[in-house]
Length: 119
Image (cartoon, rainbow, N blue to C red; front, side):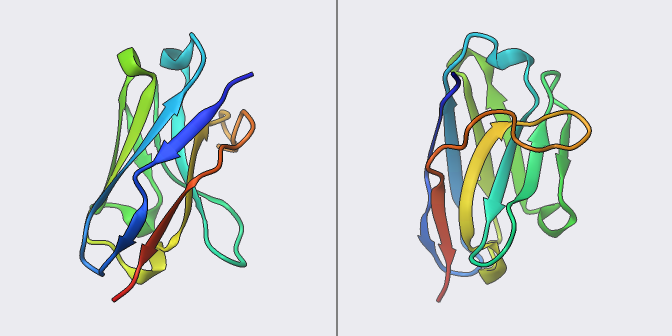
């Protein structure tokens, strides 16, 4: 069973920055496409950013140019640098290994980390 532990969330003003971290268990972390997802109240969970084992990245249009996903395979950790945050970025953020084609999470979800953007 693979487990994910997300951290780094908090309350930030619009225009601010946060860096999220996700530590994953599992000896084959390096071969997975890893992704960050978010779920706002009353909305479905959406894929925000993904990074392949080779380092290629992809982002949902709403965060392009503001968010950067990266990974450290030696630490089994994936990061999400979030800049120029907007109130609409408020959500619980989760990481998971992404299934091919659908992009849905491959393993059970962690507890997530709350990001609140508000003045």
